Length: 113
Length: 111
Image (cartoon, rainbow over all chains, first blue to last red):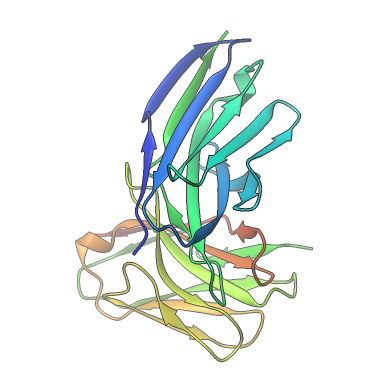
């Protein structure tokens, strides 16, 4: 089955700096890569996703890049703000009748004011 | 729309007791999922239902059963709870191959 590794497990940045979280996956058939943000005590919420036919996707201060050859993808957050502090999860999914997401173990991002 | 709802929010069980976690969605989604979340381990898929009338095992199905009651509802049952099943359980739903929307979660403690 799919295996997703996520690094780092914790990340602290100064407000206004950029943050980068990296994930690798094992199944070359995976073709969908979402990123979820989870605030303390809340449900995970999708912040951005990318499909395997695209190398990069941006949404305001958030971007995701995908390298299919190396089987890794990354989340980039620019101009970080205190409200970006949360746990971020990457996930990967292959083709099927439903999206069976395999999640990474999460990154606790802390943005220091 | 309420989105994805789950009941109960919190539950404490003794070892060997049984219970059913309820999940419902009002977004007319085809697919529904059950995950568990443990510290440092992300979310792991327990069972999923690609469409009404079908269910399949995920990564960690042992000790659980599910029922897709209709298009809206997908329940998770623990027949004989064990301390290893102490976790936060999330239900999610999606329209075919698109974004999964998560419910608020159920925090379960088994003593």
